[in-house]
Length: 335
Image 1 (cartoon, rainbow, N blue to C red):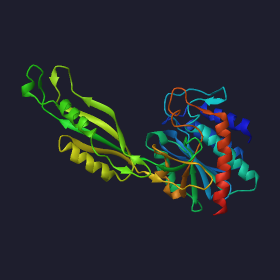
Image 2: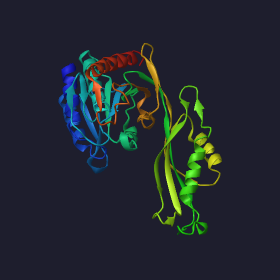
Image 3: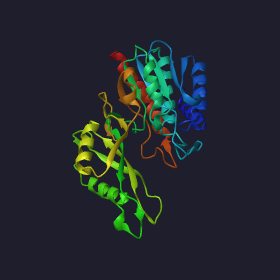
Image 4: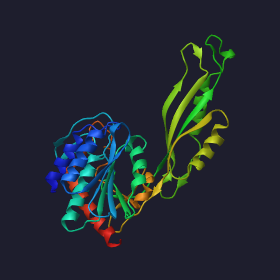
């Protein structure tokens, strides 16, 4: 598969809407294409007709992996001014195409120990990766996961700690605020106090940061609100317990703390001769620990992913195929 086929294959996948939850069609097309190339292919069923796809020739030692679900809204592919546009061009169907090109080149050289793992559901909780972790082959030693890293090897990724804070008050008529107790004002006081909290830091990953993503409260403008809540997402650099301790001490009982989601930060394998970087996002890697020692690399930038004009330079896709081929070959030498 040459560079023209790389772009053509990426466009074929991009032009199928695989917004998380409706990945069935792209999974079926991908599985059929891999079978036509001579791979032994398995489709692992998920809910609602969705699936993960695995493919290899002999027992795989090095696994190329990424996801084929995308964030909304869907928009189709186009090539313009040396860039491939479309939902998934950067995150992560362009990556998938580059990994397949690399696998095909290695196979043409007689290397049959490279496997492929392509999963659904990465963008909404990694349910595909969780399921795939139960079917890892015993031969797997290295997992090369693809996400937009501008073709730099990830040295580490941050984790996620997501919580819901809830403040309780007492409802009253707004003409008599003295009879009520505003849960919204309580919640606002809590959120303001969190701004000056001393969040955990790490020499490699830096200081923990967070965003307030959702706020809900009240029933009407003329009612003192009895209930208010906010959801916070922390980009963690260590154990969630470290963040929880700061939360508890800062909130001091003014709101309850409900756990929603945890994804741990990850230290990753690097290889001499490859540029490295630390990334602040999370990946499927924490949920694929049965697939071998993890590495992270891929074309495209996270600043382009999820945007209205998501795109990736075609030259970067071609470079990625070369890097994937080289990286897998080096890992196979030490296997």
